[in-house]
Structures are given as structure tokens and as C-alpha cells.
Length: 150
Image 1 (cartoon, one colour):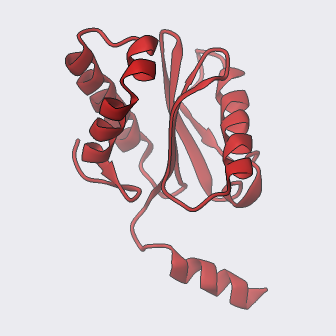
Image 2 (image 1 turned 180 degrees about the vertical axis):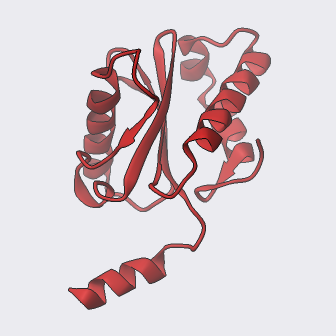
């Protein structure tokens, strides 16, 4: 068991890392999902459901980050969910627990402002019909789970 923990630590980079990014509407339908760790398709679908259930049940009066202990699979312990709710969309970043909450909240704000400039008042339909542009913008900001630009 101790050998397994050592292997897992060696497999991860030393820098704090983003594990996944989710843009989910108020009904739980994913509009953009990006994983920075290898996850099976079945586990990806379960993580989308778990993330949506975790953030959608929270009151608007609480802070925008929470422990990801309730997430299924390997993402449970040591994962933190940092999110913002804009109109009909949840922008959720699943990060290692050492990641800065305020830094990620600022990153979400920059991402949304960039989408807003690109699509002139972004809406959910823009994310559906222009998924390639959304992924391109996201790839310019985050690559391999590490933040490139803010």
C-alpha cells in the first residue's frame, strides 16, 4: 500500500494542477468538459454527475469552493471544486487541494470575460454551436492542467 502511494506521487507533477474543467447548465447537461488526467469514459460521466450534484445543491450565499471528497473514483480525496455560477451555467474547475482558490476564481472570471468578448455576450448556445472555439480559448489559458495565461 505504501508503494502504491509513492507511485501515485511520482506520477503527478510537483506544481498544483487542474484535474478537469466542467461547464454544466442548470439541468446537469455538460456543455464543455475537459480532463487533464486519464479517466475512463464511464468515470467521466460519473464525475460530471457528481460535480453537478455537488455544486447545484449549494446555496448562493456560501463560498465558491468546496472539498471534492464526495467525488467518485480517484478524484475524491485531495480534490477541490472551485466554481462560479453565471446565468444558466456552472463553470467548475476540479483542482488539487493545494491550488489557490482565489487564483482559480480569477481564472474563471478571465475565461468568462474572454468568451464574452469572443461571442459578444456569450450564452449557452454559443458553447454548443462553437465548441471548437471554446476549447481553443481554454487551451490558450490552461494546458496539461497547468495555468498558462490569466
